[in-house]
Length: 363
Image (cartoon, rainbow, N blue to C red; front, side, top):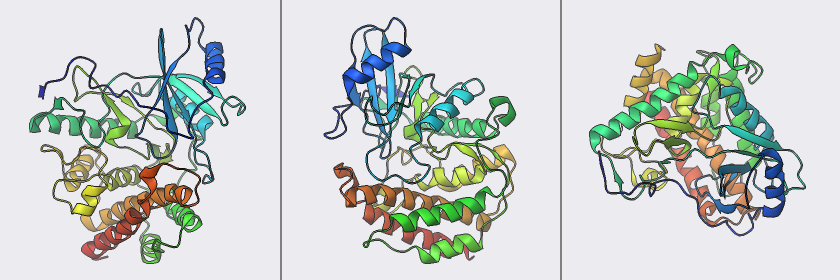
């Protein structure tokens, strides 16, 4: 590993709060003082740019460092942006999966800042986004170790004792795969705009090829490099896992399929590279096929390449729906974030990717 950075300079810090997404800082500050005895002064507030869904802020006090999560404004999919659920999931997981952040408090009083929100302790470290932080350079061997460690943390999550965590009621039991295909299809149709494909062929193919669940365990449902926090002292070590909004009990292979939808490798086409948001292209990173092979070798699940196509297509389709839901808000002027302007292009591209995987699988 090589690094020219100074201590602290590669931490994820946050930036200016976007116009229209300001917090009622005095009201939030007053509420938080009621949650944290001895909290001093008022916070320096910044906003993180990584999330395309919930809004995430840093509240930096003289004697405390916290993260606030709240939903966006505008139309929301049913069941999405549930701050109470996300808070309670992390609170329950923390004793059995220590890389979950420590929860501070949940505010259900929408008069404080316009919505429910929760606050957690900030985990200080490196968050790998589209590229590794400036000044931090990892050689291929170290990058491979980072890749392996991130996958091992996902496998560790899938092996959490559900009863020990008290999360038996988080999911609906068997039939997860079928419910996901039906649910994401419905969400897409509700969020469709005139300029995107209907995904009819893909939706019908997924429905016709839905397998039975291979297991029922805790899944993250948004496992990406930019949802992990790495140690500054050892950038291959995962010290935090963030963004538990979509966590549930479900099929672990569906979780892996979701993960690989974001996994842009070095030999992908220029359109795929254009939507890359994590450093999976670096020398030393596994390819998507290597990730699947590694995961299966560690967990013992038996899935051939033709069967795996279902999970890969599902992940791509689900990503398309998420992108379309976000674009729907922009299209209807419910958000002004310019990053969402061209999401419709990505949605159409993902339709093409799904069809290509189906064709290559010969199913």
